Length: 163
Image 1 (tube, helix red, strand yellow):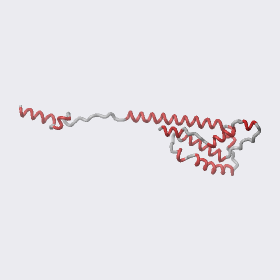
Image 2 (cartoon, helix red, strand yellow):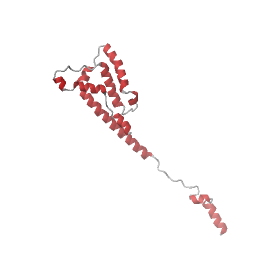
Image 3 (cartoon, one colour):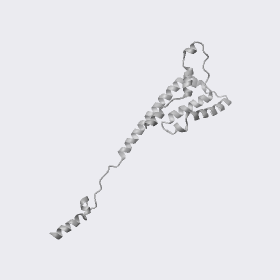
Image 4 (cartoon, helix red, strand yellow):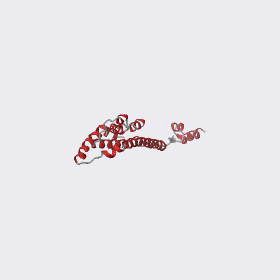
């Protein structure tokens, strides 16, 4: 379980980190360095997919292996080319709200991981409580020692015959 939560808390997104770093006020910009390049459609789509995977893997852990960052990048490149072809620009709002998206990604991933952990704890507790209480089944004659000697009736008959 802790490995699953650890995977869910792995919220590193190279695309989002680069976006935030490009839009953070830094000393180089104050000195007149060139402004950061606009985020491409491919980067925007890849980042959106990484965000969706980060949130989704709390509910669907297989997303960590079926939708790794490399696959998100491949899909982003393919869909970004289509968006470019039709003149759609997605980068404006992502560039404007990069820090907010990073915070949402980290806090949201944390929240999903905590929720999944609590849900697993509750399920384990309910499973433990649902286990049947073991009982000892009585022997056919009512006493384990008597079953070996033929039961109580057999013993009473033996006493009556000797008596």
